[in-house]
Length: 215
Image 1 (cartoon, one colour):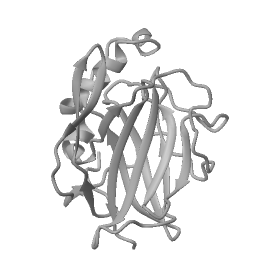
Image 2 (cartoon, one colour):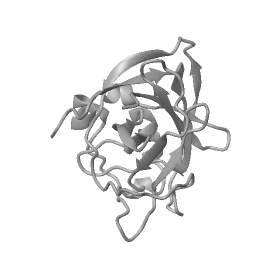
Image 3 (cartoon, one colour):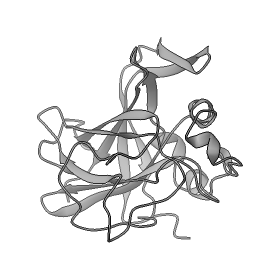
Image 4 (tube, helix red, strand yellow):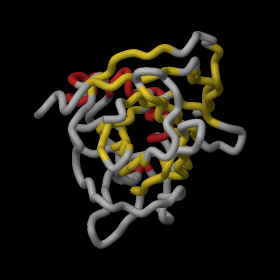
């Protein structure tokens, strides 16, 4: 395992915290702290990366699972200002813990950031596979260069609630949580853990801000 790659990135964290309401419900708890830039290490690319993924916002391709809106923000680490037109490249496992390969293209895609640094994806909550906690892989490209490689993580309490329901419940026996995931522990997983809310339609909304250096 290679614990660090090219550099340490900065992550700007917003003031959000998901709290349990019972029966799998979630709402925003007020934190109201000023955003701060903190150091967080990168991690390895990981499994099943395919260069040249399609440019699209909706990536589920009909795969069943809990609906998830992924809101990724990209900022300049030196100024915390949004970076426009960065390419955010994501890929993930389906509810059974399986990835798409060359012959298919589900649950992977690229979006470019807008003027607020936001790249948004419509997907599903990722499933688990042996030895890994729930996560989404990400690369950020600026000016044709890869400036960040990481994994995006979820609060265990939210993952537990999701995995109790179909179709995830047909893949029981989750063997790894955040604290026991080797990459989460070694590569700053806490700083890459997303804030999660659940809207009135029952859709999970995950948010994270990634600070990068332009090159």
